[in-house]
Amino acid sequence: MPVLSTSAPGQFRTRTHEIGYSDEVEMADPSASTTRPSKDDGMIREKLTAIADVFNTENTLEDQDATLLLSKSTPADAANMRRMGKPQQLIRHFRFLSTVSFVALATAAWEIGLFVLTPGLTDGGRAGLVWNVLWNIIGFGPIYLSIAEMASMAPIAGAQYHWVSEFAPDRYQRILSYISGWTSTIAWQAGNAQGLFLVGSLIQTMILINDDSYGFPSWQGTLLAFMAVLIAYTGVVYGARVLPYWQNAVFVVHILAYLGYIIPVWVSSPRATHAQVWTEFDNGGGWNTMGLSVLIGQLSGISTQCGGIDTAAHMSEEIKDAAYSVPRVMVAVYIINALIIFPGVVTVVYHIDDLDAALSDATTYPAIYVLRGAIPVGWITVILVLIALLNVASNIVYLAAVTRDLFAFARDRGRLSSRNANRRRMID
Image (cartoon, rainbow, N blue to C red; front, side, top):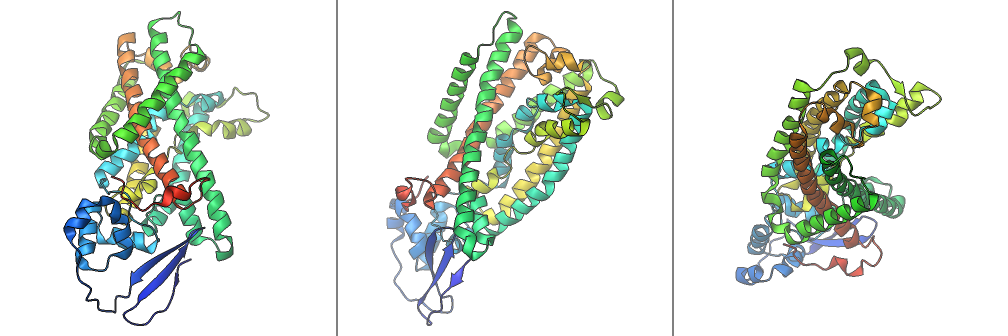
């Protein structure tokens, strides 16, 4: 936990913040008056790589103002970074609305959520899936509120492992933050694969619905996933500067495409009965009890909620007024996603007139099975193209958050071979 050392008036106070690794930040005593000469603002502007150091050594109001201007930080952002013992190395391009769009795209509530329904339909049936999704939405609410509260206190890219260190007992800070850091980093890296493979699978599905003879070979899906990786890498590395500026436009497409999916299904697709949707459970997996089957099938319900709303926390060092904005972004996206995914799941479930047929559909996706019963193949292809493109955008922004998490962990020397990751330079 933070430790403040005492000092005489007019001297610096050293604040040591242990987050598994000892970092020290020198903060000027506010009671002391300083008369040091101001530095040339022009020199600061010409050397962006020196800004991070300025955050730790700025001694004049002119220096502070120049630093805030160049990094697009607020005084509160600068104070939080100093308190947490970290230099400001990223420019804060994101604002509240662009961050909401960013996180909504990263989570891809319906673009991914509607394509992971098979486990819930197999183990639990229509009713099991609907109730699983509903209680996971409710159950994850307190979790997201807790994360949002911690993000308001410590808005930093490291997020979970940093918070573990903040609140863990002193003697366990290092080991718990280290374990949490590795767990979080590996989980984020692995989670990125889901959307990448889905892009490849959707492209193959588009071919299949237009050509029934297509064999859906796995190796082609893998190569298409590699293509999705390359696109995401290119977007994150070479498109980083424009990343905040296209989020809102794609978010609008995200909403319109969702309406383009559910409206034709409600209008034209065959329907199941209310009893089948809400009260008839199914143990398609052959488990010992129906209760066990429903619990196993809740993987689908969890998948619709574990899409990474904490993406906002990992982008904290690029969000202006992060302590204020990040928790509100998390709550806003949680509500938006709940209003999208639950009606979307209910739409799919209500229009599965034959559960066995939906689970055995050649596309392997019940969400496409109900679409095939509502609109012609040509329009299905158009909708799937939009979904694939939205998943490509989702992969880009999700990978951006993944890289920030990895960057923070390396900066704290948690990752192997990360000795040089703590170079204090501005990254535009």
